[in-house]
Amino acid sequence: ELAAEESEVRSLEEQRAAEIRAAEEARRRREAQQAAIAAALATPAGQGVGAEVTPGFICPVAGPSRFVDSWGAPRSGGRTHKGTDMMAARGTPLVAVGDGYITISFGTLGGNIVWLHADHGVSYFYAHLDSYPDGLVHRQRVVRGQVIGYVGDTGNPAPGAYHLHFGIYPGGSTAVNPYPSVARVC
Image (cartoon, rainbow, N blue to C red; front, side, top):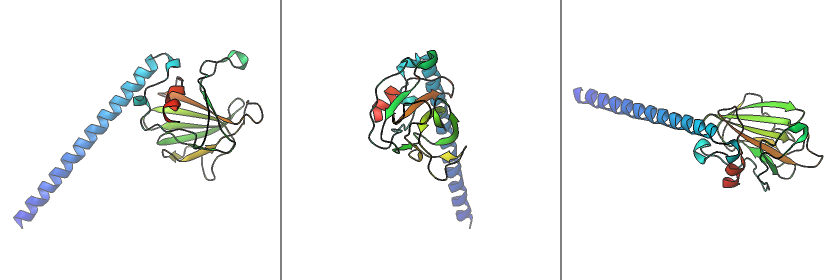
């Protein structure tokens, strides 16, 4: 009986040590991610961000698409372009590029919009969506690869100019050029 109790204690001690190691590793990952976001925000926005800022990043368009680096191009009203336009067929699925939660809205410029606020601290902007999947709701938790919308032309694009306007916002505030990130994976 004593040997069984000692074995159970050793097992519990090993389990606790493993939990402590896992928590420490998670803390190190969070700190590294925060440092990567801080570095991204200190880099000129037009240069985009490195892969370390967007861990596990996948192509937001789940189908054939074409795109160019149009960061900073002039737009109406004296604005400049703060994203990458990814041309694709109407209704092409759009997927979450990371785990997190979404917010759904509508804007006169962006039309049907989804913001993905990823767990790693980067927010992603999806605009001009045609529609959303059945059952998708505001502030819903989503996982990487989950369909969160479909390519459309809502908002201010010319009718029939079906595309996703995709933006990357490290730390959720300042836009950076998404082209280098999407060019790596799409």
